[in-house]
Image (cartoon, rainbow over all chains, first blue to last red; front, top):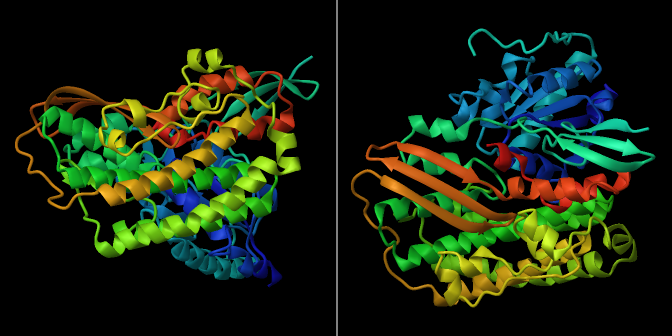
Length: 156
Length: 358
């Protein structure tokens, strides 16, 4: 129960143009102040509860993403911020873009927009909190993502 | 004996996936090897499938921090292909949005830099002041980050009386706040202890390493494309580049703070000189030939090369961004730096990896 009162987030920049990233950081600064929900940005995955992913995945950062995901202890929630993280965005046809984050790791909540406003990101974090709470009660379990070279989904 | 320590791609200080392999000998860096490609999307190839108008929006999404100036530079390059003169009012609108973009980018960098040397409250102050600028940009263009103000043939939105009042009010509010920030960045004892004499580059070295922007001007080179390139408007606005001689992290910080004041001055001048009239010129046909356009981004010089082939798609788009020019200087200055200072030295070139890798 107490987990959802003070979730720590880790921000992962996959293939983002920085637009979503500066909005994620803006959420933590005084005007939007995510800390009033107990949210704290933390640098290490081992202490994080919510993984905030911005940007799509490409062939180089896919293993970085898997590694970080696997290092976060259960229960964990993944929040895909922005159009790129959700579906690949306007770059979904680029040769080096595999697609949205959900092609590699399970995503619990999506925040649409290019770029989403900080209010929308906060809304997404609050939505992720309720999922985190049900996960912490053991209702839903996270799953391990296998690390196997540069494996990519067949439809990429 | 040296140890190799990976810095990034996931690092608490930098939101972006910068990746450096640092060779450490007794806590001092002796070598650094960068690894690029974590943010490579392949945009220069992607434009094959988009027409030259749609490419404007792709160019804006190369980087979310200097998005306006990417769009402006691209449209100016394509206008060279068409050989059209756009209305003067549209050029002034571009300058105003570009300078607003620079103010928000520099405030963002000052905040991240303060975070880099562990001054959390200063980081929060910078980002709080930055929100005022973003509010103005949002009122004018409809988005906080991607502005889409420039299109081929002019500007996509006009500035109304209300917008101009907002900009002037913002200048009057933020300028004293920047003065407050300057007191801390320039005079604070602990900040000076961290920055003075760190990662010094001589005038000659900075020039020969091909650096750009505040990194170049922090070492005493008076090169600013707003003064020298083919963007004529700046000549009428009375612009002088900000230059510092010392060439260390402290000097580069001072350059950026001075540039903030310059931007406020340019904004006020541009507003007072902005003529009335049309904001777009009709464009006919498809682009042919090749053109190069250079402008000064918050991080330095950006070069756009475009080549048309007489169809709606461009044949080639090549972009050289300022961070790409500044990475060699990073590799030259990192040896001899203590491991704890590496985040500051990396941040001091204002790295924008999504620009570099596209």
